[in-house]
Amino acid sequence: MDQKVLHPISSILEGEIIVPGDKSISHRAIIFGALAHGVTKITHFLDGEDCMRTIHAFQAMGVPIEKNKNNVIIKGAGMDALQEPLVPIDLGNSGTTARLLLGVLAGLPFHVTLFGDESLTKRPMDRVAIPLKRMGAKLDGREAGKYLPLAVRGGALQSITFEPVVKSAQVKSAILLAGLLATGTTKVIEKTTTRNHTENMLQAFGGKISVDGTKITVEGNQKLTGTDIQVPGDISSAAFFLVAAAIVPGSHVTIRDVGLNDTRTGIITVLEQMGVEIEVIEERHIGGETIGSITVRASSIKGIEIGGDIIPRMIDEIPIVALLATQANGKTIIRDAEELRFKETDRIATVVNTLKALGASICATDDGMIIEGNTQLTGATVDSHGDHRIGMMIAIASLITKEKVTLTNPSCINISYPTFFEDISKILN
Ligand SMILES: O=C(O)C1=C[C@@H](OP(=O)(O)O)[C@@H](O)[C@H](O)C1
Ligand SMILES: C=C(OP(=O)(O)O)C(=O)O
Image (cartoon, rainbow, N blue to C red; front, side, top):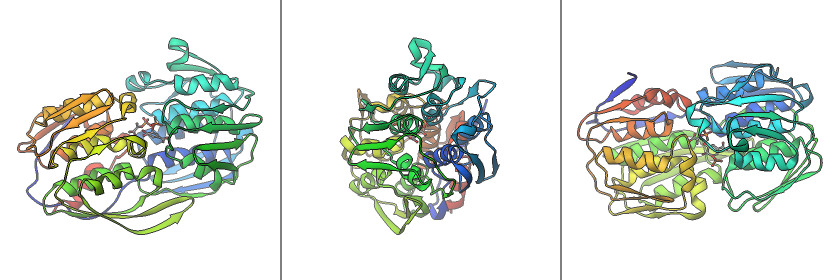
């Protein structure tokens, strides 16, 4: 069986690392590069399994995309040059590819079948299928198009005004992408601001979009122009090392060139509130995104309550924050995070069960979890359940457990962070 035996460390974590490119931005750079006219050059692209799904989907539509490790060149010829894919498209484990691609395919005159792995097949697609049908797309699948596999017959779309019920950047982005291919003006009015990389990147490709608080407006039939995109390091990947440095006594780690877009930095706010010594340095702006370096020192941590509008700004970091909370003085309560139930696994259940198996005192609530602090974690054999963020949470936990941890099914970590274990060894002293 695929497994990794992880031993607790007796040393500190010290030094600097650069984490791989942001997953959300890498997906979008491929999508906009494929829809644009002219050459798009992407540097520090995330060479992970999920982003490869997006590349393969557009290659299947005839877009010339060349990748050499972390550099990608797309020779776009505009939306009209895309071709109907001849075979079904495999989306693997990638929710972002599935939802954003549905937005694009809704507006193209193709018949396409999309499918994914066991986890993706259980994740809801009706959150995008329902509004896309309102725009005129024809989609069908199990339970009237709720789940993959989905058959899409795209074509002429009408613009809509849409107020998503779920707080999801994938839903917003799917409708904005469909809006680019529709006639008229499409509006998405969010309840809470979610990550805004689609909005930023559309502008980097010469597109027009207006953002007024939580109201986003896009015109159809725009011409986009290829551009150069430098992908910042992924703050969701950096989060594992920010927490590792905070909990391993004596540690001092710097993560260079991380994306610091406001819609993603909830983790920094939470670490500060939990008493972690964290500092952002060398902040600057590149291609509509903010980038900088983050320094963290091992700290005395306190339990807090986390909920409300900060949740979408740190949704993928909640598993690693739950681990941090086991080391805090006092209790941590996480609320308003019901969206975790629709990720690669039900992340409320998986985090709670996994940390319990490692000796934590933690319980699930409908929309989050309650975690007692001051716990000595113990060794155990625990499974990633095919969820990359759970796999990495377990690996960071193993740095401070009393005994060794056996992580089964570690290879899912390649979905978002193929060099994760190499990067840990770079800062182990
Ligand atoms: O738009 C994106 O790139 C993403 C949005 C989030 O999902 P939701 O939109 O479903 O919250 C996040 O969890 C996912 O990892 C990436
Ligand atoms: C939820 C995630 O990704 P996706 O929705 O793209 O599968 C994630 O990376 O944690």
